[in-house]
Every structure is written in C-alpha cells, then in structure tokens.
Picture 1 (cartoon, rainbow, N blue to C red):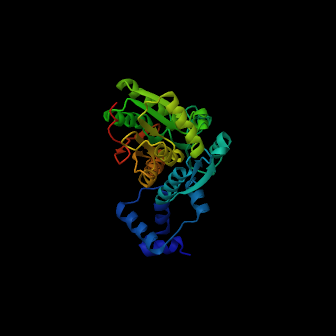
Picture 2: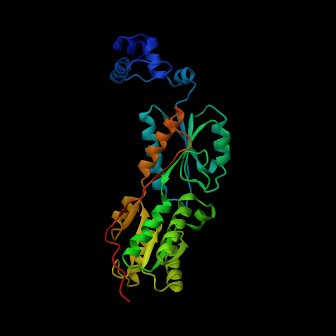
Picture 3: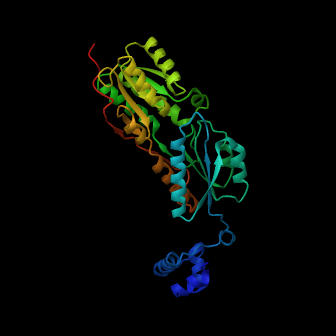
Length: 336
C-alpha cells in the first residue's frame, strides 16, 4: 500500500504539503498542488478514511435516501442513485444508502451524527415530514425534487409543471381538444409526491389557457388496471383523442389496448409520455416524450452538495427545462 511519505517523495515536497493538499486546510500554489495530485494518481494513493475524517472533521460520505416503493418506477430511482454515486466519487466522496422507509428517523440519525457530511433526499413530497429536521440541522442537504415551500432549501428537479404544460401544448397544436392524463398510482397522489402533483398542475394550467378539456385519472399500471382506467376515460369522455402518460408501467398496456379497440396511433389517438428515453424508444409505437433526465439530476445534486459544503451556495432551486422529442405516437387530431 502506497504511503503519504512515498507520495511526498515522488512529488518532491514534504509530507505536510501532501496532507494540506488532501485536507485543503492551507493554501497551496497551483503548480505544487498539481504536482502532488499527479503523484497521487500515478502511485494510486488512497488516504485512510478514518485518518482523513479525523484530519478534516469530515467523513467524506454523502447519505442518499432512496425510495423503495412498489408504486414508483424503480429503474429511474436506481439511475439517479448510480449517477449520485458516480459523481460523488469524482469528488472523493462515497455514498451511504438509506431507504425512504426510514423517513424522518433516518434523516434525524444522519443529522445528529458524524456518519455523513451531507444528505440527498429523493421522492420529495409537497409537505415532506423530513424537511423540518433538515431546516433545524446544520447538515448540508440537497433535495432531488421540489416541496411546496422551498425556503432555505437547495433543490434540483425537472420542471414538472413546465413538462405538463409542454405536453398539453404539443397536443393542442395538433388540434386535439379532449385530452386525458393517465397518471401514477393513486398512492403517489395520496402522498402528495411533488413531481406527480406538479405535472398535474402544469397540465391543468395550460389546458385552461388553451381552452381544451382535460381528464386526469391515476392508474396502478399493468394491463388490468390500464384496461379499467381506459374504459372509464372513454365512458366519461368518448371524444378523447390525446393521451399524456406519466406512468411507465401503463405505457405498453395502453398501446396494446388501443390497438385491440381498433384505435390507431397516431391516426385516431395521439400519445405523449413523460418517461425515460429508453421506455419511449422501445415501446411498440415509438413515443413522443419528455425524457426524465435522471443522470443529470443525480450529477447536479452532487454538484450542489459540493457547493453547499464549501459555502458557495445555499437555498438554491435549480429546475431543468423539459425537452419534448416528437416521434411516431403523435399526429393531427382526426377530423370530426
């Protein structure tokens, strides 16, 4: 195992200089710092985590609270988590995973200990019970999601209100006047999960502006649940020609059911999805969609953690602008 003394010898500096480069406790010239970092990389030196924590009063660990719920699309959650872990490593940090089920108790455990220097929360609800603990703590924290009140909080998220509005606008521009939003499972709305609620708000606001009719129906996902939801939609609004889907598990069942009913996509009905790019392009009809920028959200959350730890930002809300990609699932509304 390479020692700090060997790094110092290789770089032609003192051991204390290497220590200062690692801890950041003293200002080191750019050229010396670069030489030390090159030696560290060349020799493959890895500081002892315990010694590093004692020297810097930091653990160099980020706690990430990941939701493990059956009503959430787990691949997106995992993609965000992997992006967080990958980005954290570039800053010399490791990631401690907590489950969302730990809730306020898990946040309190991190906030009241030296287990982690910062915490990143996912699956943020509009009135999240974890937030008062974060506000009372001096622990650096970033939310991947947006609560109703962002005062004093640092957040990153896709702009889901703008996403909903963009989907409605696309269908409206194609002449669709009756639109149905097939949403997440009912439990997601019962928890007032931020991304789902904000999408509905954006859909309804743009529908009101453009004068189109919108029907929102949650759906458990899967074939049987989608069949019930679709039947209900056409019973209530038989003239529906535009669908917005924010439920990955409902995408393929919806397309199959429309085909079975003799409704061609996009000649008879158009479908827009809010989903990962992979889901959209691998569907039986390539879907017009707004992609979930999971990797970018994870990476930016880590960048916000680093900026918070160094005092460069606090209480900043960063919303990623949605981008709609047109594919084969949307077209002009059928003539009456």
